[in-house]
Length: 320
Image (cartoon, rainbow, N blue to C red; front, side, top):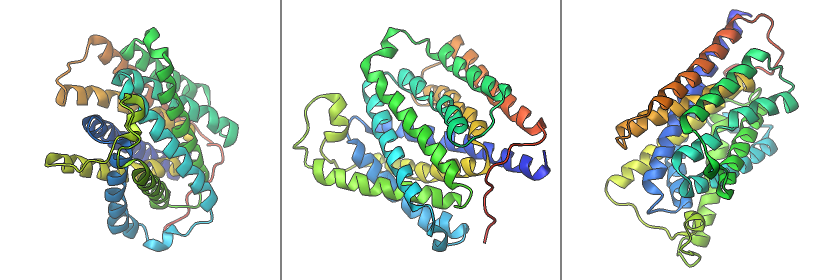
């Protein structure tokens, strides 16, 4: 494997880890805000902050607004649809399921990404990488120890969310050969802004609220934030911009099957958030599961950097 390809893969993996950190911050902020605010409001304010950051900082650093011109507009439309679907289903499930169960089910995403990368991107996923994905998933099972409650009907929501995220990643990989990471981040953020604004116009007055927690995730009325909540919204917006940019970078630099196992990094991060934010000290099974997850990612990285002759895949265009 050439030094250029190795460097590209390492940078892509680091971007995937950074995206996992950013998205874990979004999960925490949503848990803080979901009791008092509807999903469309959280998404709208987060999208406004993220779009400002993209337009003011990230896009100028990548070449200016000219990079937003794309030949993949239909593909970006599909990406927007996939990520909006994923957010609605995952966060709806997160509101009615225990956090650990929802996150564990959502971690079907790397498995689905790896499968779709073989079916639609014609990527070759060898036994080492399949093994890394399976070991990482087994680590999640060790942590969560799911029982029958994990398979209640509501559990379909985060699973559908994982299908949506997997589809987004595959579409990102398809577009990543010609579009920059900032471009890949801009269109979903703009899509979030438009969809959440429309939802706010329809549901914002609260006339559709039902009193049922599952439905009211979306149907609750708009409520203006107060005090520290503005900061939490801002943190969610910055995390959304950074996470969207980094995940786009990861999937344009690396094969989807290589990047996918590193999304498991979010599970050990959940342990950190539990200790720091909720004062929940992990059980021994959590440490064991986290070790399996991290070990799986490191094995995948080690194998990728030592395997000669990578399969052909579209490469990102050069800057400029």
